Image (cartoon, rainbow, N blue to C red; front, top):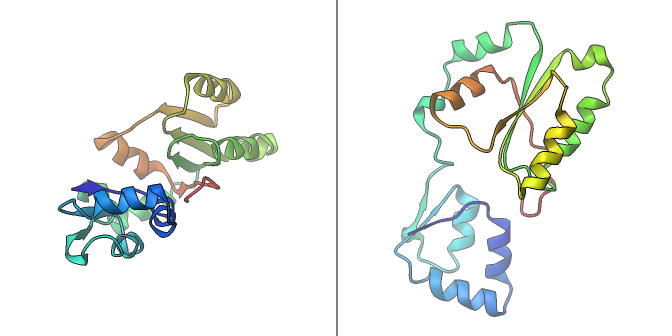
Length: 172
């Protein structure tokens, strides 16, 4: 079995003729199954593997990460600052630097109304250090690390009112 994330890049590889096309077609057609995140990916792989061997598992969201209506109402009723969450790899094109720049361009009285939290890995240590220097000293900006899971992840989702991913990363 293989588990495929994303989709547009693989779609391109399976549509174009050439070495990548033939290698992917050869190997994918021989696996017992492909696990995908949604119907569009299933359609992409249906040209290479029988539909009954394609298994859709919608984003692998675990039940404990879902919130009740009351919990959702509560997180929006506090009336304080707005908590914005950026949860993705912090690669060029994902929009994390643009989000920081947008925040820093706000007047101080507007900045005080937002807290932006970043979680995700960087392509290099140099880029991580550069990002940390950029947000250093800004009370409304924080970086929690490359990964978050379990009850810590649920708590973060529970405090966040907005998920922001202003991506222009290829294939998203």
